[in-house]
Length: 414
Image (spheres, rainbow, N blue to C red):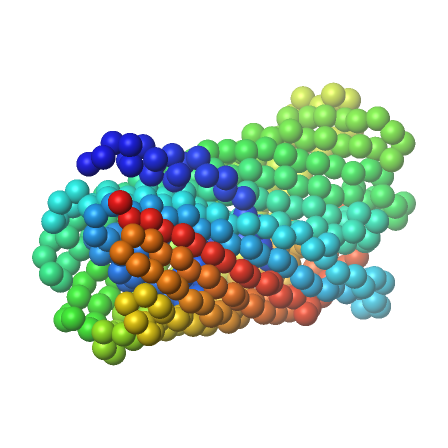
């Protein structure tokens, strides 16, 4: 193996900037081809992004391959706020705060039976922003979770029918939350708060593929839950002036998930993928933050608790790929993502209902390189949720929400 190529591949996977943002929490946009097929891309041939979509399918990569992908996500949406009598007290929209989902992948075939791969891509991320002078800001006016998973993977092909993979996951999250602190008795903002911190945690994944024949194949991928112990800095800027600081600590468990996929080849040119993803969102039961060592004793509460109680949910996707020739191909996809946020667990951090994603894409490839582009439209749907005791509203309705998606990928063989 060319050691320079290996070093370059590892550097590309580990050091590429990983910035993500979307109208949601789970990220599925890991390559342009994956975007084009609605995320139903578990059985692609010669695609280094299989590290993300289905590690067992890196056994379909021949030789040594590197890939980079950049996906642009631009969320839009509106909301209405109501008082305790059900009277509308404010209507507004989010501040458009687009983000990027960046994926970097490297796969090498060691021999006829063994493969090594590594990827760096976001599995969980979000960004949302609202006007700072709005009543919605008492819940949240800026929320951002930057996330990246680095996944070194080993895959083994047992025979023509079976292949499997196992990998570690090094997961990073960087969290920033900003809101106005509202006094429900005085009915006024008493200051702004900012919580900012980061954490690293470990998880793992495993996958297996089984080919019934040359045209039909199934696969399954499991990704473990990951528990982050987040140490953060808390700052409060009172309306009267000055600044109060404190140490913040919280525990957040990112959910485990199952992917189940089916691939059917109609002929040498056309294939269809089906994919179902079960995500155990019930692990996200609360976002509780403990405060200690305040710079002004006796002013801040010791705990800032927020119940979530999300429910487990399914995401269903279908993707179609057609090769017009050895060099040109087109793809299309559709995905349906169930809403998992209950009425008493919603907020302006993730004001997301059920999601329907429509996408198309195209690919060019020759013997050494592949370029793919994709466009998507995510209909985010509506969401109703209750206000908290410290919010300047009793209930909220998010509606007409959507996300624009554009993606490009480049892959190089060595």
